[in-house]
Structures are given as structure tokens and as C-alpha cells.
Amino acid sequence: MSRKQTKQERIDELEKQLAQVNALNTQLAQVLKMTEDGQWVVISEVDLNRYKNGIDVLIKAGDALNEHLGEFDPTEAGFEVRQLWAKARASDKF
Image (cartoon, rainbow, N blue to C red):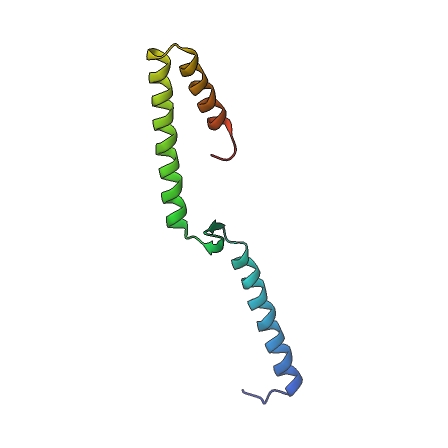
């Protein structure tokens, strides 16, 4: 059975749809964002995983280099480099 909608019922239905769209827009606005050349861009989960994997590789390389320097460069400069790496490794900016 179909019945004719009143104007108020149609308005109520459209307001519900608007509320759903606004909720979806809010969720989309909370997607991970990053700054690139001063512009906000949304990155996909695939790109995010690729960046994470790249960072993990860089960390492993830095750890290996740090270990290598520790074995072959006992000088003050080598010690400073190892200290800088330890500080960078512990940073939340990595």
C-alpha cells in the first residue's frame, strides 16, 4: 500500500538524510591527513602502509649503521653520532 506523503513527512525524511550525510562528512573529515606543500591532502590506507613500511626500513638501516659505527668508530665524533641516532630513534617524530 502506498500512500501519499505529506509535506512535513517529506521534510522529516530529508532532514534525517541530511543528518546522515553530515555524520558521514564528519567521519571523512577525521580521516588521516598530512601536509604536503602547505596543502591538506587525504592519504589512502595503502599509501599510509607504504609510508610505514618505508619508515620501518629506514629505522632498521639506521640501527644497522649505528651498530656498525659502534664497532668501528670509537672516537668522540662516532659517539656523538650514535647519541644523535638514539635520540632520533626515541623521538615521537619518527
